[in-house]
Length: 216
Image (tube, helix red, strand yellow):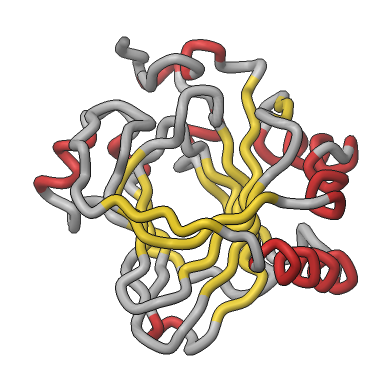
């Protein structure tokens, strides 16, 4: 499906992402960190050694990290009317939670990463909050985004990864709001002896139903 530039939603036209410094207050951040520590006990490793070369979205991108289910603290945040109003005010998108709860992701070892992909159908907007990160930017774990490739097959990004790439390193407490169903993105490999913990929430968009099954 092709969408002309004039038909782009304003949030996508602005790049399809924003970094917010204070979505969570200090108390909420600490509550999520404590909940993640409890979830870490039963976290499962997600490891895919070879990318399935999906061209559109979803699929099985190469990756290695640990993931655990969020609990009542994250769930309350996910379903908070205040959060949805804030998201809509800043992005212009009417959103609903994709599922009952979110998840925590730990990049916790040498080479832990996530290859280029778009998010699964239904997850139009991802809200990714960094809860903790050791080692600073030199430790790796950068989010890489390709805002200009929203209408291109993923193979075009893999073929020229440096082209129009933007790289972000979220500090603890910062949140990336990303049009993940359209903007290709990845997480760079982590260096040894470092760990990065993020909270991940996925929202469906009521405003842009054409992105629910396939990107533009």
